[in-house]
Image (cartoon, rainbow, N blue to C red; front, side):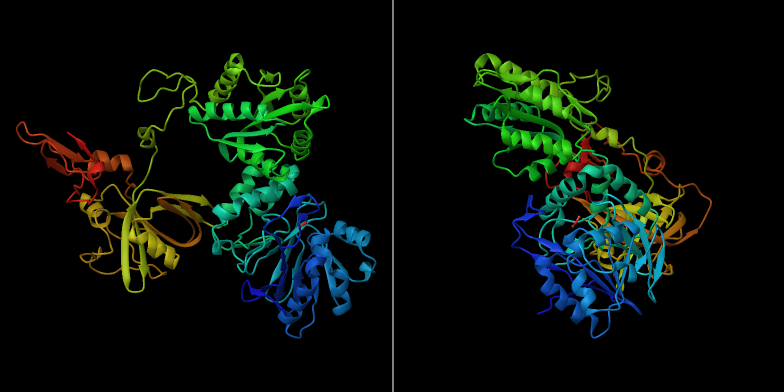
Length: 621
Ligand code: FEO
């Protein structure tokens, strides 16, 4: 029985999942299965984007037949000839004899190598940026060599702003009934698998991935349809930003990945002690036993963490077998731009450290610590200092740069971990804005200080909004908002009106007179402001307490020539200065609005009567 899913009004997912496959490409374990995605565009012409692996051909053919609803199949776009995406071409040709195959020159060559049929008579060859009109849709072909084979190409549908991305942005794991990344907790449940897929499948080709990202950055993309894993229709930057890091071999996390190979537990013991000393310094650590954890997971972790430690016993006068395989694997996947430390062990002739150094030393930008720790069978008391020295050397990378003083004090010992000084955050420049939204008949607004233009074509901005704000929820629900840019003329009462209480229980526009609305129907503030930006949300990024909205600007107009207010100007000139308590009385001042509470103590549950912030936002006068 068919099993298809709607992607857009014109696009249907006709792929299938395989949960019986033990090893993808015969190498990579896929305990959660894998999806083979294929998409059918139903326009005046019908267009299929790639086929699937032979393991799921039956379901795939049923899916196409159902989705076509009796229509013929006009085009098959072959973006990638690897058989997990091309295995069903012959059956399709038999079933749809008029089918044209759209691919690049190299794609046609590879199809000839894999399959016996007369492709020349049915190929529709395309070159870089060539287009194919199918009625309402125009498809643009973008060559993306080496992601993951040389013939790979992407396709961009300019009508629905969809990028069909072949293997790029793919992920291991069956879809389990979902299709879109926003239907699952991708960061928690799938990002590790997306990284494992990337690092092992295309990790070697970072330069080519960066070049493809560069090419597609000029396109207005609202959806990404990869050949494995989930479709991205919101928050595209969640996966694109990871690809930008991975393609440049930039670590995602500052911390230390320790991989060890240990026959009787002595090398493991050294690795564990090193991890403890690093943790003592506040440095994150992860540890893998290379004889237990599949190499693909450790390769993936090596792409994630900034520092790598390899601890291996010596075996047959070489590196222990599983560690040797891992080191060669990392080298083959072009690992680079990492700090590395090595612990070796050997009962009569420890050689593994030197051999690991030799292999990794040939990789680009791999900085290997000079002092290996070399063990003879087991770690002894006298060698604990070697482990501590290694932890110190690694820890030095995690300290603040020498000479950077905290709070105008002398530079601290650089081997100590230095926490974030919140005062530095106030050195950043910010503006102040009234952010407004409308949900049904409810208008609301709040004050925000983070609005930034991020692209010109199209004009996109990003805003950061605290999740506690009612306006935040309204924007999340409606996808629309206006930003009214406050000028230096704005009086304190504007900040009180929009900033010091919640729209959940008050009407912030109650005393605002005529309701001025932009074309999106959302109110804006015309008094004390110098411009209005109206935008539509395209992506969101969950930042914990705040959400970052990335939005396309749909309308923008000026209201005055008054200079925009900055956060600093607000504090210096608009916000009332706290008045010291009279006489010898003591008091506490609200850092948010300047309200002064007189008294020797401030109750823990005190709420500012003006701005409703709690006791934590007060400081003694
Ligand atoms: Fe999913 Fe490179 O094939």
